[in-house]
Amino acid sequence: MAGAAHRGVNRQAGKGLIPVDGEPLGKSDSYGSDRVFVSLRLDGEDSHEGLLGALAAKGHPVIRIEADTPCRVARLFFLWEIATAVAGAVLGINPFDQPDVEAAKVKTRALMETGGAKQSEKPLVSSGGVSLYADAANAKALTGLTTLEACLKAHFARVRKGDYTALLAFIEHNGANAAELDAVRADIRDKTGAAACLGFGPRFLHSTGQAYKGGPDTGVFLQITCDHVHDIAVPGRGYSFGAVIDAQAAGDLAVLAERGRRVLRIHLHDVPEGLRTLRRAVETALR
Image (cartoon, rainbow, N blue to C red):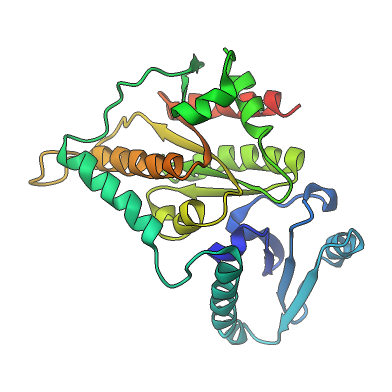
């Protein structure tokens, strides 16, 4: 549901209310006014009426869908495919093509042809195993700031009503990393009211990547990259999988910057330590 993701659509599956893109579940006052909640449940399951009722009382649209058997859930895939196409049209995103995803691929190929992404730029801030980078336009919003917390505070201050936020993580997709980033996005959501997406790269580039670069300018992004401790060579190619990931991250970041998106890059020199530093910095920035 790439198009729907940026309007804060939520769905209920099984016994848990699972927000779109896995956004951690919040209280009824955690959400901005641009949300639509869809409750999908099997007959007899917990419908979370308490939370849904509270959301409806605050004016959020709440749609309830009940299926009497699990096999009937399958037909809803078609429903959400249509919903995604319609949402894409409303948001000005082409739901049947991905030209902006291709733009990032072009950048990536060009980088690989010249030896891969280079880490020669100077960070704006370095602290606790974390370095922060920004292109010239986004760096202007951080002029004079010298701490990670201050830079993040200024960055999230750019979230406007109706905007969404997204963490674009080019790090290993595992439970520990996802848990840390889920805590970060929950804090962002609770403090700003904006939908908080999380995508692990390069995978997300083929789902929400088109919306981020080709949709309306309503996203505030943090790209997260890292040093590759355990890297593997691509057989017969003369480079590693880590080099490919770095080039994909750099290509995507370059297109986001060219499109005038509000984006910073956070580089983790040690992933576990860096994620803890980032989490604490976001908590401090949003107080």
